[in-house]
Length: 181
Length: 361
Image (cartoon, rainbow over all chains, first blue to last red; front, top):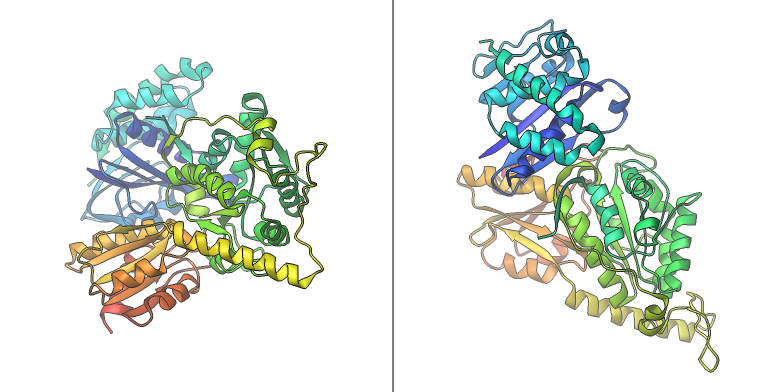
């Protein structure tokens, strides 16, 4: 199994950390992982994206132009990356703020209302975990228990009390992802 | 098995410095390698091992601090990115002349000048042909993974002290900024002052009564002596070129078309090999690990086994390709492909270049 994906959105949406959590979860189940961010002025706002690869084999290029899955969280990223999904691949997006919805018919498109669900849960910061839950429902690349294990391993002890909330957010995403096309 | 972590290349390099028993790191921040000094400052190795971490006032100061500490027999390291490494060249030439051991990393960004902060491999000439003045060489190791960013620090210190030479870890923005799984090696204790006195008879550790003075300098006004010193350096470089060649082959056994690359371009070209094989093209990858010494003999030997063409893949306008041409000596066609100025080529572009420049001709 090799999953090559891109997560793209605004700086500050938790794009890079979502990728990091996914990569950590891959390590927890003995897989090879790579995480390649766009870096530079993006971190001061503007668009941010990260290419994550989870594989059973040694990973070749960490830099890719076509993807099995694209998680798209703003319009600029939709404009840029809808065309980068491999035929038969998956595109997951949050319709919040999207004016031009994806048009491709040769890929599987899903919606997750991450921003709305996160704010309904009372914490906009768990937005990325809702989206991650949606992704893992569509593509169970890593097990939820390994996501939790990864969080425990990567977060300092003082943040461990937030793990149950993250778990709720993952479940919320899993329950609410809907097929769009 | 060592400790497994998810780390950026720059962080792995910094952690490896602590674990390799480094006595000091002197640096000055610059994108895309600032995580090295950030990690060291956050990690506070002076509490863990007694290692000194110091942000110098400039890259020039940092490399001269390296010169001073290395002269005392200490394991010392610095790092920077292209414009900063240019500033260090004077110090590196002096380090070569004085035969001091040190490890330094260049996380290359696009140039020339201040250029861009995005990845590049355009510092190959500077790294392998002597960026400073004089007839000198340095060992150049090119990591292609976060794992190697860690491993090459340990290897780098071993080689630096074995040959009393500067070892350059030539990375780039991709390898520095990406995160991968890394297995960290077990920490090596720092050497005590007594161990340094015993092991390094050249180090300036303080003159004892009855022992000869030890002088570290790159200056000798007597040209005959300087020529002799140069003979000695050249003999050392010859030993290194005979013993420290490192490379890795992928799918080269039956390969007719070979990508030759190092660092992040080697990772990208490895994917191009997979794409080529899926199309029925017998492609392989010759990955350079040591850029100096250059695995030219190995390349020539492989070329005679029925290779029809080589594509040098590097994020530059064509630098390493010259060494490939010199090595295969017309045995097969050689061409170059690479994006540059901060643009990273894709595996598809690289394969397309092989089809167009080598196979199609």
